[in-house]
Amino acid sequence: MGYARFIWRNGMRHRRRALLTVGSVALALFAMLTLVGFVQEIDRNLEEASPVRVITRHAVSLTNFLPARHRALIEQVPGVVADSRGEPRASAELVVVINLLRRGEAQGANVTVRGLSPEGVALRSRVRIVEGRMVQSGLREAIVARRLSERFQNLRLGDEVRFGRGVWRIVGLFEAGNTAFDSAIWVDVNQLASDYRRPVYSSILLRATNEAAVRALCERIEQERRFPMIAQPEIEYYREQTRVAGPIRALGMFLALMLGIGAGFAAMNTMDAAVASRTREIAVLRALGFRRRQIGRAFLLESALLGLVGGALGSALALPMHGLTTGAANWETFSELVFAFRVTPELMFTGIVFAMLMGVFGGGALPARRAARQAPALVLREL
Amino acid sequence: MGEAIVELERVTKIFRRDQVEIPALRDVTLEVEAGDFLALMGPSGSGKTTLLNLIAGFDRPTSGSVRVGGVEVSRMSEGELSAWRNRHIGFVFQTFNLIPVLTAFENVELPLLLTRLSRQERREHVWTALRLVGLADRADHYPRQLSGGEEQRVAIARAIVTDPSLILADEPTGNLDARSAESVLALLRELNEQLRKTILLVTHDARATRYATRVRHLDKGILLPLEAERGVRG
Image 1: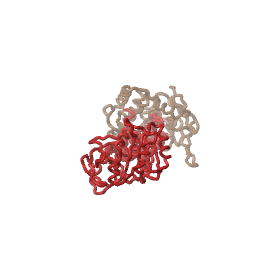
Image 2: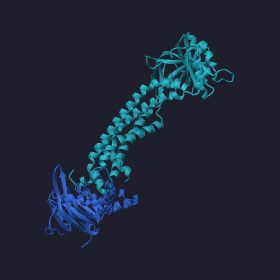
Image 3: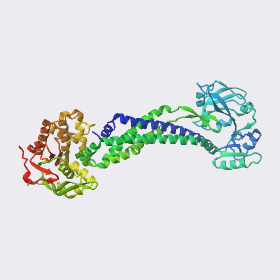
Image 4: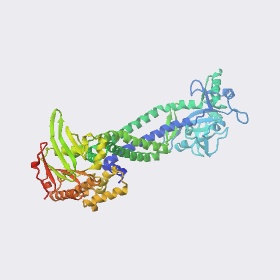
């Protein structure tokens, strides 16, 4: 008989109690992995942002626009990199929000439509068209983020969807590396501006010659006196955007913490009962020569085992959530951001380790200490 | 006179509960020689278990000295006492105290987990002990599948598996029927005679006097004088 077997048999001695504890740890871990997966997903939107790209927009707010006539002024500011034809690598973009019906639901949700220049796709390294092709300028064609197309009606390849002044044909599906663009429809900016009769842009995306030139480029744009503009490194812009996810993140982490504490108490209750019901056996082990720390360790390992089993079960429960998409409101544009839960092996491993630690420090530490301090003399007296 | 394995010299133990002092042992002086089978008898509350606790190092005397195998027990640290008990003392309890989730074999093996013996050596020791108590065929039975007498025999196998020099038995027949009690006492005598184990048996079972080589009586914490010694093996 090995030590591990002894611990396992002890842990499974009161199966109903052990299963309840394992169940509560599993549920806590399931909720935590799901919430952490969601929060991590919010953060991933920042990852696409490049330090060499600059976003220029109206100085007042996101809902004010840059007049189309200032486009050349901005694109020709020194510091913007040029392509092989000498054209500035820039994408003038216009964002509108439309309402579409979700699949299987009669209720609509806001979706972002982004008009962009042909350079707009090339500027975003993570974006790739996975089905179909890119839109042609001057036509009512659209490419749709694959995740979005799975969640909304009439957004599959070849479908037609009505917004603006006409019907738009879906000619391609794209993936954007789990960034915010995975929640958008992309079209030609000029066609979109024409449809909405807005000779304006929401923003202009520029690529700086290098990272060092970014700050100077921003300053030059902001010094332009003919029009009030803000130029920000893209990464800063998105950091501000994801800030809106702060309350979700805080709530998620708070709930996860509460569930973790609850599971810790369940484990402690189980281990407390185990120590109380094994008073005589602990005394026997002490009489046989087991040291205090060996007995304490046995109880700690037992609670770690409960945590481990609960953790593994919770991870297994969370696994089907991987890749599941859901919507969340972007609170500034009131459009729908699509999130995919990502339960990665690293996250599962961290979760299982966390569950074990929860068992050890949350549930096992105090009862184990009590067991270790028990006097062996008890065994020879009436209990 | 043989070599004294247990030496108690003027041992007094007083328990304090709130402000009240309860004397459990008063000025007890006792020697147990190697190879002895001493039955320590007396009514409930006479201090028998307290005496065993002191000899095992579970408790410390209020005054006096307790030496086992030449070692002053009360001066050892907790860690030293644990290792010392594992090597030198075997325990047999009134309520058997087997671990219910372990088989008879595993219960006997338990004290050997603390030694440096290999798995194979441990197995050999366990089989030897189980054969000695006549329960080799019950090795894979759990305590709940054994009778009271069999449980106590497993407990005796566990007590001797580390080959200790001293076996402390606390009312080992207290929970047994007459037949099982006789068989346990006979087994203890066998261990004493054939393996030369020193046995200190605390009991108020009068049958013990027929198996022990010496009998001493405790009454109200006082060890009765030698004149009262009367137990002689039949």
